[in-house]
Structures are given as C-alpha cells and as structure tokens.
Length: 131
Ligand code: ZN
Image 1: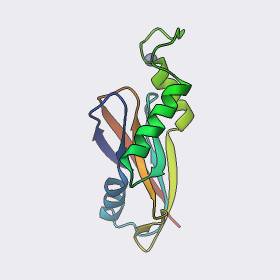
Image 2: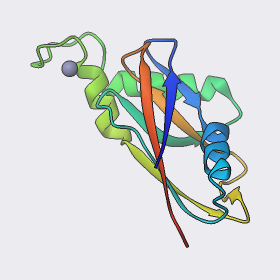
Image 3: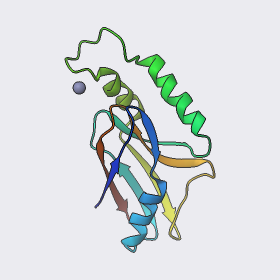
C-alpha cells in the first residue's frame, strides 16, 4: 500500500495528482495492474476529470455548488454538510489500468483529489492489484 499526503490550499479545489500516483507506483517497481486510488475522507473525493482547462474545474465545482449550496438549512450540526454531500456524489475512489508502466488514461483524463472543505492535509491511498 502506498500512502500520499496532499495539502490542499483552498476551501474548494481540484488537485491533479496523476503524476504523484504514477511516480509512487513506478517507485515500487510495479509496471502493470489495476491502480486503485482511494481517499479516506468524507469531505473530499477522488475523480477522473478533464486535465487541461482549469476553468472547467471551476465549472464543475460551481455545478456541485448548485446541487449542494454552501448556504442552506442543513440538519448536520457541523458547517460542512455541503462538503459531505459533494464528496458522496463524487465518490472516494477511481481504478485505472496500468500497462508497460503507463497509466492507461485517456489523453484528456487526469486523476484529481477534489477538496470540498479545505484547506487541509488529505491522505490518498494507492494500491495495485497485479495483473
Ligand atoms: Zn461534518
């Protein structure tokens, strides 16, 4: 198991962690398999997203904000109900095939940690199922 630490810098943001994930797996000498990327948090997510246009990340975060607005009469006692809801919608993991030491992502795909209640130190767990 590989554990990465990602420090987010904003309340809400998407951090491209594709290179960190790839390098960590390569360092372990692993060249093929299914790469599972997981985050053990309830106010952050792991998603595949378009990796070129930062404005599109902003569009995505704003779209989630329309589903779960910051200001709303939530029942949750903390102030972060919206972040929990966004995290549940987006999910905590992705699985990416790797072959010949390359993640088999599409040209426009990147692996992102989505922060919904930052800034914080976030843990990302990477595990490879060999194949
Ligand atoms: Zn909470």
